[in-house]
Image (cartoon, rainbow, N blue to C red; front, top):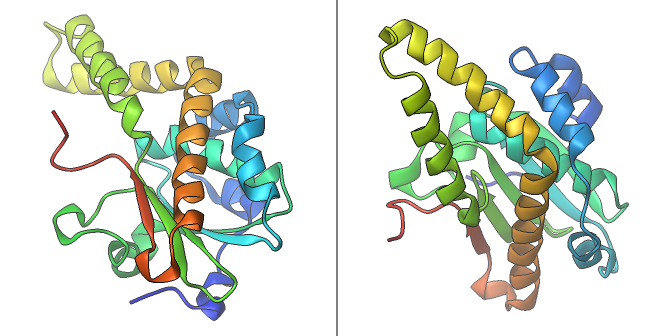
Length: 208
């Protein structure tokens, strides 16, 4: 299964997606407004003769999506060389999973960069690989801070702390995510069509 031009055009614009967010809308907007697009990330797209297409499969409840999706949408907003369409992953599970290895089915968000013929150039899974140690450290800190709480209280407090941490680091994390995302796209553009797509983002099993 692969996304067609017809299906791509059925996706949401950035504003349409924002308007229908039900979970984490304010944190999403805080991060969206806090991200600054690195010039080198934008330059990868600005160098193209025609716009690239970007299909985003995301979910408003997902923590990684709260950080990664608004950052990449800000990049798309910063240049006319990215045509972006957004899909709720939960409504497009089979299509989303078609861009993932079988052992990673269900992973979200997924970002797929395509040429004008809807051929894959690159895909970026979940978030920046270099962010993983930072995210692990965040989880460890939260676990220590909620130790001794009941399971329900710890889970609720943990969600709030994760969200606050992501918002507080919007600019820093956005820079990391966008530089890594653009590097993956640049790598895909440098490949022969038959060798594409370049793949970036997190890996599973995790690398040592």
